[in-house]
Image (cartoon, rainbow, N blue to C red; front, side, top):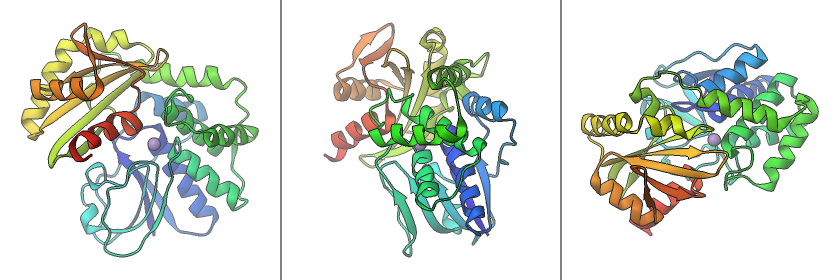
Length: 307
Ligand SMILES: [Mn+2]
């Protein structure tokens, strides 16, 4: 039995790629099960509600020795808590690689817009048919990760894959569907501030120090900006409690392709300002065209510390 899992604080790409990959394994005769490392965000919930299909169960640990395949991540800090006790047998991902294995494993890591794109290619290459639901899930992951091709992470291949998938999914208006997804993600109601900060939240090591980067992709940035004081207090509280060197929290305005960042402390503010040439605006650090943690924020910080 192989267990398929996406990253912690799962997003639409992590969930949809792992659910559809599990189905690929099933169709190729491999016994497997998919788990989620946390509850869904509202965008992912919207996708599953639209399709009327059941969400994967949340499971935060697996029995020692279990065979596990990581989807949409490869860094231990973003993975299941007891990864060290498990038998890592495969990785499908599109992030920078920071993984150590004790034996050769199957890896499929590509510089492409989403893990769902890689999973789609597996179906195409092997001539395996996708159901309408599976095709819709993969399209949702592509749209989510690429911000409907607005993000610099998107490639021409993602667009081709989406078109091919939509022959099966038959979504009549992709732009309208993506807006429904993004609006669902933006509708956060009275979510508590720590949940808001950690909705899309990943841990990284820069210069030997532990940082976290939270991203809030939204069609209504005024919501996050309206809660800025509360967010800043929340960042400080989490930083102290978790012993982090710094926290970066970036509100990404999806439609205008710009972002507003808050940090946990003065040093991190200084760092961010310097690295991204950010402009102080309304109590935040504003940067035009900065929308991708994977392709812009993390590489620039890596370069600053290790370059
Ligand atoms: Mn992804």
